[in-house]
Length: 390
Image (cartoon, rainbow, N blue to C red; front, side):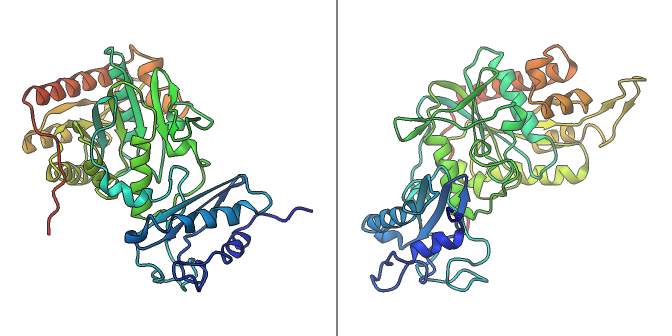
């Protein structure tokens, strides 16, 4: 009977791999991250001194081979990271690599990627413009707005891709009705999935929908950098990036790694959501990314039976905020059953019900966002750069 592939068996195999000191093993030194096992694939990271990254490549290979020899292993992905001092125990940990909130291996990662992600600025080859769709908080319909904005831009005759940068809660597979995994091209590039004429990449293609992503900053940065630069996007007029909510690692990584052409901020009308939208907007301003404008989602509800209008979350708050902050207001999207149903079914409303009021609203928003981007381009603004404050 074949033994079950478990984390303990993987760690036992890794105890045969000597650490940088060539005396103790990498597990005893606390260098191994939490091991992730998924359908015969094993992922983990080894923490190292970044100054020794090149010479310790042999250590990574040795760890990979040790785990590959286990029955039931189809593939091993090992990443060298430098998010803590070698041998130091994690907060709440016991020095054996099983402390609180450890980074896990990424299906995208390759040796040293978490380290390299911090030092590879520049654009994405073949992509003319990158637009971030962001929000200060979750639950405001940012991902639905992003996918319908991308489709509306495509209908303007543009070549469009969409990157699901929400590592912790990827939505694009569900929103676009996509299943399966992207194929590898030439050993070092992933071919994006396609739906409704869009090229699509998401972490959701590589992990089960219910699998939690328990990652720390360096792993998030690594995955984002590689989803941008190690995917065969081809020639695109615009890449729409569905950002995770908030103002953390993902947003800063995007600002550091690529020259964002602009950001679209999504909010609902009520004051509580606008407070967080304001934080998101100010974050992009601090890193010198042009804000293309605000979108008011769930702006108003019209009863499909009686036609009565109800401003469930208020109305006009985002427009007033845009005026106050001196940024463009891109438009309002109504709260409708059609948007919810088509999103859950993987049939975005712009593609499947193009003459409906929500689809027309998304088209207007896309036209205004693109016009603002072209205006910024004509003014020849310098490429955005990160600004670090003490």
